[in-house]
Image (spheres, protein in one colour):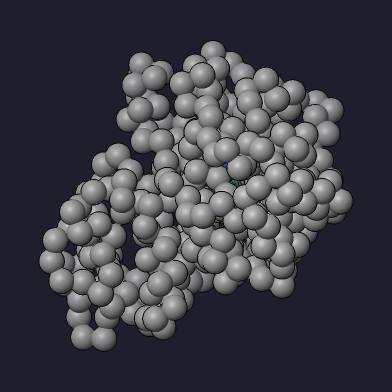
Length: 315
Ligand code: TXA
Ligand code: MG
């Protein structure tokens, strides 16, 4: 796997690999994505192959702006308001797919909707411009493992399985994008980098939630055991038991701490790095401190619940 530098030569090399049907990992403001040409079935298959991903799990397509997204999907009023308010940024919109969009069926997993997002990251934007088309990109980790927030995380999971990683340093947001479907009335499918409170404030009303991991076919990607470190995870633990590594939040003793000051944004940015670090320590049992279930805390708790789910509940 090549490591490409965040300069003109690195961007050109990454774009050339994408044009040639290769898979390239690249940074976004949320997590590193594993990109491929969204219109090329073979290239997209390469993503599933590299990740070992369940094939019914559709992918997010990354575009440089709303106008480019509108070539592939249709926007209603709510979708337009959300795009205007939060793009570029950590929001993915699931919207009706246009006929003759040219998007590979492997990207949508056969659905008549498409998840689209405009990333708020200079290097991601430069790569999208240099490539000049839609880039399908799930998080750049083996399926069921922790999402990568550095090029080293990408290398740890996918070295030898992908062409290259464009190294842009650590990701700012640290959890994936919030996913809202506007294919019907607006519905939250995944908590993420944009708090649902901000989405509801923009729309002027509360929106429905469909986060139920067990109903995977209607809300794909909600596989329960989706963000799992190697060790068993116990949640809402005020203190560790014998043999457990303690992942803390807020002041107090801990093996690792998501945020000693109890800051949810810092905790989100550090979450996957901490889970990777616990993997690297060989932790077999992990206890996690309670995290407030508000704002970014919802996304953190969603990831943690998946990490703690029984391992046969998903891939
Ligand atoms: O922050 C992010 O969103 C990152 C970066 C790389 O952009 N990407 C990411 O992709 O998290 P991924 O593939 O790991 O998660 C995509 C989620 C999955 O839960 C998938 O099921 C859901 O989006 N999804 C994709 N298309 C969908 C659709 N048409 N309807 C419902 N859910 C969809
Ligand atoms: Mg993922």
